Image (cartoon, rainbow, N blue to C red; front, side, top):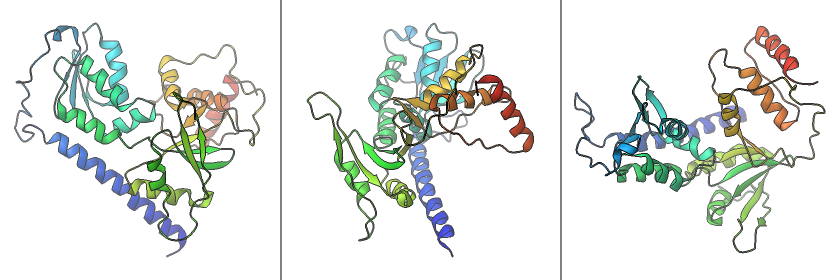
Length: 314
């Protein structure tokens, strides 16, 4: 077996461990109540808050959330729930959502903090937020996103704003070889400012470090520090034309991709005809670097190339 096959098998094994870990957490939460009942789990005895009429949601101990679509606070509650939970059913009057490890990973990736998720969800809920839900949110988010793999100046760094022990654990090599070239970087020594600690990782060992992080239940978030990238030249005149306007949902999708002068790794899913090409063009002109676009066939390539030239100056 060659090195490529060995590396692929190791990546698959690490990814599978992350999936199994997430599935175990979700199964434990779903088991609350009586999931085997033909009528589902019975949470009818949950006490309501005195002002429950002014709150738009029910939060169940198994991670299910029900949202009143006719409530005055529906719009703000909807924006929050789609950021932290997965939609299950959306009939006319009552929408159903489900907290999952992956939905919470996505929330953390967009800089929604653990205690903010719990606080806002409790504030929107008609009932007191169940302790099982609080524990599930903390369990899924306490480590994810606490460390990042950042590409800046064409070099990779593992970076964290939290306790330095997190980085030292990931930094530990599995054998006596020199796996990482450490470069301690500390900023914000003054009281009241954030302290960022990081170390450099050799390019050929990036995947190995990511696997090691997954093994330790510290999945790394990938980011690209494009704002401070002075090595790769900017593409001149890469701006949207004055008449080009993006829609609200495209703007919201891009807001989850960019933050603090960095681009996060992830997937934006839009239905057919929703403007995926324009969303990609807007992302490219935000970074203002050379971009490689992948498509499934020649027709898609021609379509994307044509629309790109219509939407931006070249």
